[in-house]
Length: 183
Image 1 (cartoon, rainbow, N blue to C red):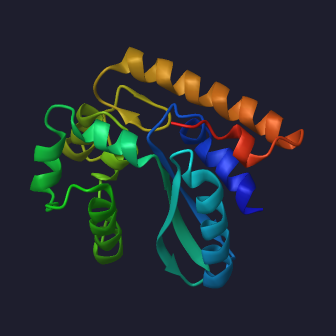
Image 2: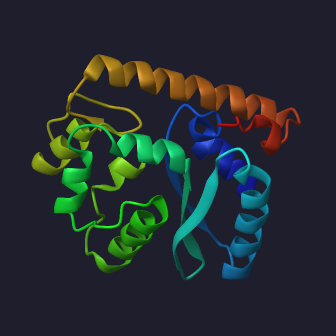
Image 3: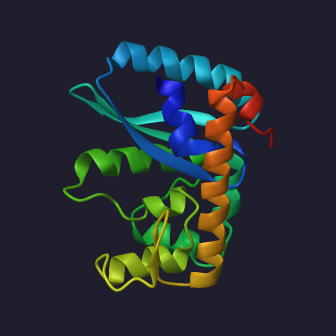
């Protein structure tokens, strides 16, 4: 069951087209979740994938699936580290920043919008979302777009095509290990 969520929500990350994805699992015990995440991290870690439960409460977990090397590359783009610093981040190792993000998710009344930078969204779209309070976007797909609409639409199409192909291959018996691209 958990693997189906990976295919449905994380195919672009598994294919190394996207830095990370996020999804919620419900109706799961903390022990089941830890065993599953440990098994998948062993299997996919050598290919650059990390699976981290960011939060767990009342049988529901928020799961972050990422490629830490891509995350570090994303943060090298102009303005990203400055923006994260303004959000209170000071440890820019992938593990340290992800821990800080998990803490912000647990402590904040509203979802920390800088999470877009942990998912590979362009800085212009994260800033635009915050400044516009989620309104007035140019288009919506895997995220709300405030910057380069044409490039975002191309990305959305690639991600959707990837999701469809991965779902078909997985349904036909291809394992997660074989579907995960090494990086």
